[in-house]
Image 1 (cartoon, rainbow, N blue to C red):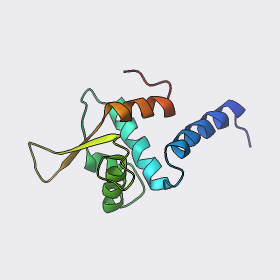
Image 2 (image 1 turned 120 degrees about the horizontal axis):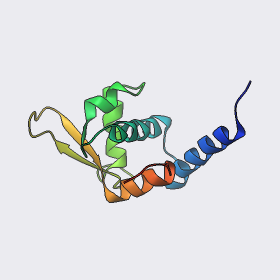
Image 3 (image 1 turned 60 degrees about the vertical axis):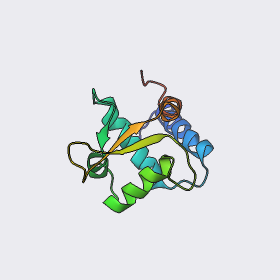
Image 4 (image 1 turned 120 degrees about the vertical axis):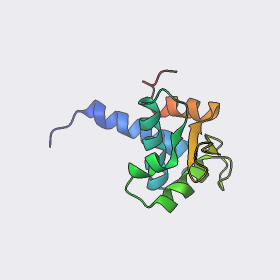
Length: 115
């Protein structure tokens, strides 16, 4: 198996940042946050649709909804990393954005992120 040590070290560092935030978080919660960061990195907008987050993670839509609540002020842990809002153009959809605290955490996990 060929893999660079620095690649493994970077992955371990990112996972440690999640563990420091909450040592009891689940893999779907980590994947949901990473997918959100991926979408926001490609977007000019501050908001992304919850359905777009769901489309990129290998868990059910209800699980993604619970994961997003976990990262927001509504979850049991109350991380306050995400802001959730109803889409004003289609109230059946939810929009998701990072709070300032969420942006700081994202830069901890992914130091290469720019404002």
